[in-house]
Image (cartoon, rainbow, N blue to C red; front, side, top):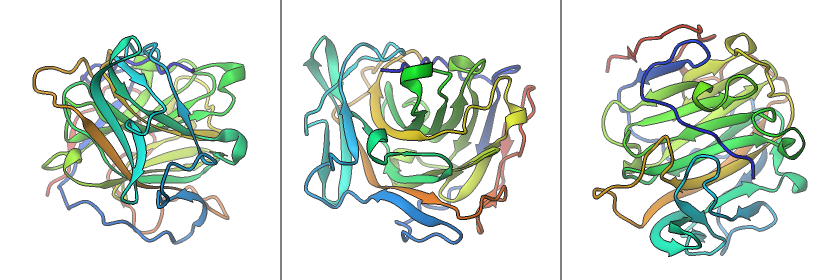
Amino acid sequence: MTPRARFIPRVFLSGASVRLAITVAACGALSAPARGRQGWTLAWHDEFDGAALDATKWIRETGGDGWGNNELEFYTDRPENARVEDGMLVIEARREPTGTRAYSSARIRTDALNGGAWRYGRIEARIRIPRGQGLWPAFWMLGDNCATVGWPGCGEIDIMENIGREPARVHGTVHGPQYSGAGGVSAAYDLGRGAFADDFHVFAIEWEPDAIRWYVDDRLYHTTVPKDLPGRWVYDHPFFIILNVAVGGGWPGSPDETTTFPQTMHVDYVRVYARPTPSLRPSPGGETLGLHGLPRRPVRLIRVPA
């Protein structure tokens, strides 16, 4: 498996690492949007309406070697760790000896050889994340050429990551040559109040030939373009989707006495949209809260008044 090397301190970084935190007033999580989106065509989706995970769309990844991040879980193919229940995908992390690890969880990816990899589009999911110190839920993408060029040369797009000690914050990041691991080019989005685990939220990117934009609940908070990167732009080939809940690792740290198990991530749907004519403008109705073309210098916390 391709490792996701990660150890990102909770400080604002300069040089190759750019971290922009944006705090927005809480306006409530979106209800499940209709499948149609103005200016986009639905190209692929899973609403998790069946009795089990669709094996024609998803591949269960297994193992417990730390995944390049010193993670503590063993990913299994058991329904106890990943299943479809009440119209949703449920990924469940448990504290239980599994393989050589003290925790079990699940990691699934779209089948790149069966139509499950895309170049450009809007990729979104409606998710309620787990909570607790040491939990690391993620909705992300890897280039489908990882087996031949390796990581980070294949590119990685993190649509949403959360670490348990930051309950009101999610991160959006790209990793590529000369900007990977702690050097990933990243931004953070903060809720004005409450925690992301309290309710569902829609996490999305809009990805075009020369731009990637990150959204939470249709609020645009971050844009990356080639000139923002200290290395090559490697986002010009198909990527597949990954959903997982990691436990522990260098970035989130280990669970502690405050962490309760089991913890679940619920995914209402995953959708991929194509735009007939690429445009560098945000989708209609998207509220721009971030900066276009982040400078590679220290940035300050930006707080948007309620």
